Length: 483
Image (cartoon, rainbow, N blue to C red; front, side, top):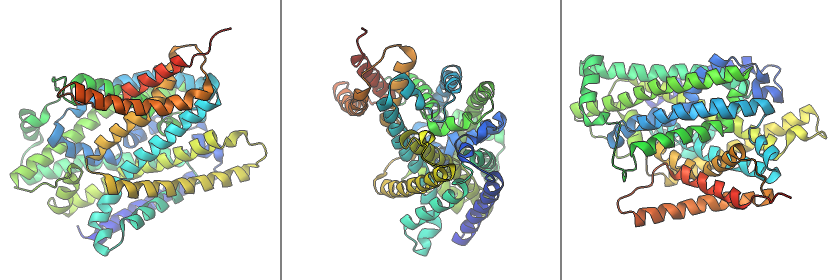
């Protein structure tokens, strides 16, 4: 595909999002932005969350990852089901009972203001890193195949992307995103299905023959039984469960969509439906990755060193213009799906949790909306800076980087919520920030120690569990004595 063709597809898709934003943002208030006035249909939220859960990371990184890790990622996906069950049965009833706008309000009610601000801070850090990783993928592809060829610097490409997201989300917020996510999920899934179909046509094989070829190859291996391996199946399964709990259940971005549903029952149906659908969808992505590698082998295509570049390189340079258009639309859909909701959730958390906008009686509704606008655009600037910095340091598959970062940044949230839910003790609230700082640091030191002491052992995504456990222990040490 030519750079001008890719740019045309990008602009046309962006224009479609602006049409949806215009329709959904009329008469929008802060309540509309934060929770969609709690009127979102659960099935629309569930369908749209498929795209938000997968994002550009899954769209590019998972297929590219197959060459190094086969289908071992499915053990993480199986763990998702357990994680979504915990969210549905434990966390959602709590959030609806307390009628929270920001889920970190629970920490204030349970422990105090310092715990509340600590939870919100770690969400902001976690989501800024996660959203930057995801947006980096799409912008990198656009930069390589379009803007870079015209001499436009990467930083300007990022800025253009963020400006577009800002303008279609700043008013309607979550009400707009619920509906744009539906569109984006549809295009992303169609892109995967059509990409597989095009590969089958190029190789002149049937779907059944390709399934047999993949199943008979080493690429389809799911279970790694070596306990020292970073992909050891039990570590993968438990990591998947806890990654879901923290990156969905303890994440304002994902929970904000669920809290926009009318009732708790609707929100729970959304979660459980999503957990089953994600198994099928992730299997499709892994199958696509295997098909890409088989295609490259048959056609003697030299694969790029970066696994994240395998899918875009083959789709845009070898499979023809139709495959290129399909890929670009799928990538744009996936990237927008995670980026727009992240920006909205970060704005919500900063204004509600840190600025306490809901408790500001000295501000009129119009002044609160103007304040939210300022926060919205300021966070976009922060994201631009982080994306540019990430481009300078990234040297591995983005999905691996994302889960590793999550182990350090979501761990304190896991420990705080676990202690609050499973004990009745009060803690010395003012010291909680210290625990939340020390836990990730000790986790990092423990990782180095384990890999040095236990020869051949590689710490994987269990970083999250270690970090959460250390935070929990820190809370135990801060228990207030009963009088």
